[in-house]
Length: 367
Picture 1 (cartoon, rainbow, N blue to C red):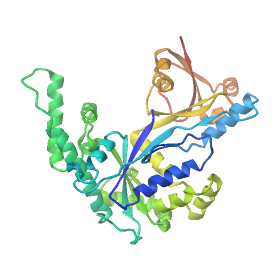
Picture 2 (picture 1 turned 90 degrees about the vertical axis):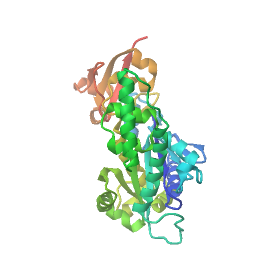
Picture 3 (picture 1 turned 180 degrees about the vertical axis):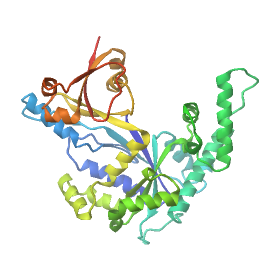
Picture 4 (picture 1 turned 135 degrees about the vertical axis):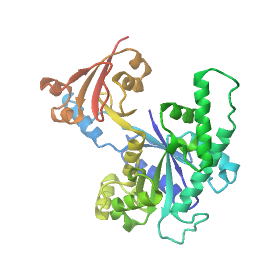
């Protein structure tokens, strides 16, 4: 599965600057990374994962290869969703296009302005807290429109149909009271109805605070204080300087690391954003390591081995037999499959095995 993140925000809060910087930064890395701009406002970038090069080196050494096998990271699709202004739910600006686009993404990255450059006109932006309320009000109005179009079923004894209507009724009541659907969703049945109706405020949201360069050193403290201001969990807040991300975009990987070190920052904004997105959506990666390629695959936390195999190819799930599994650290330490098998660190897992973050896997399938 791939991850799709929609970047939203009022005009001049820095969302397009951030979007362009993320794409250019990844394009400037090694040529064997997958990178593509699908449309002017949609781009696919690799998920930073330092484990892959180490796995590739292990595979090359074990197989006595003269070059490393191709490396294929997991990818994230970023969508710069333009056109949001007050009244978007009624078609103001590019409202309809905006709403259609946001329905398609897995997670909403809501950029809020907290940088001090007053040469950048605000154009509707007041302050971060008010800006958040403007956008979420537009999303709620759109959801309310969707909910109010639903029709109560005629006299019916169909339990599922009646339960669905009860959920819609509760969603409608809460939306009218200004509550986001994700805040009032209680169980899997309600999640399913929200997904069926493509409700915008049912989506997970990350609040990206676009700050000045000198604020990045205080990122941890700012994350906590902004979470309190916005009344959300700290895990829902990411501190980024779009300006710094733009400057990183012009540097090679080694110089990027030096620049970040000079700033007193361990990770780029992209790395923090993707890591937090994975946490919010409860995603994890498993790894495959062979002579043809070394690759990271994205799955939901808790998926079984056959389901993970199905991410590679649908036939693998249907014809799953067993999975050879090793922990990443053991695979590197003992130099690949032969080594982990010799020291008893390789496991054979069956259909009920739940995948773990960083599993190195080889699936055995029938015909």
